[in-house]
Amino acid sequence: MRNSPNYYISQVDSRAAPEDKTWSLPGAFIGFLSWLLALGMPFLLYGLNTLFFFLYTWPFFLALMPLSVVIGIAMYSLSGAKLMLSALTTLLLVAVMFGVLLLWLFT
Image (cartoon, rainbow, N blue to C red; front, top):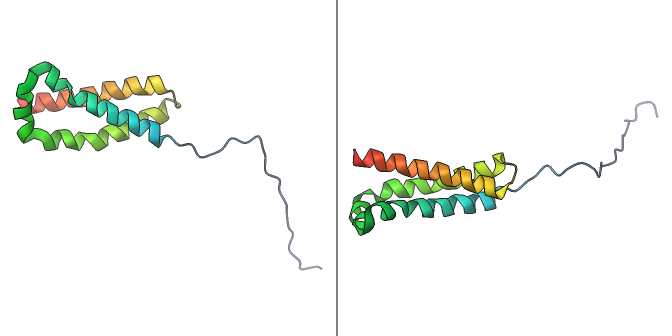
């Protein structure tokens, strides 16, 4: 048995934390809800005349939806899965994005 390989049997450490964490679903939900709330912001500011404004500019606001979902996932993962903190930061960032877009379209 001179040339036989050496086999090492290792035990799995039961105290180790799982490596996989799912942040996508709550973060995506927060991002989508903040996009919907920010989409209502022009209606609060300008009333029903916003519908005529959205008639030509809806692709810009629709393009912010996947970005809002990604921001929600990122904020939820960066905050350490703290729901309230990530919801507030996501809502703030998405509202700022919508505000910048509105300012860009109005100038």
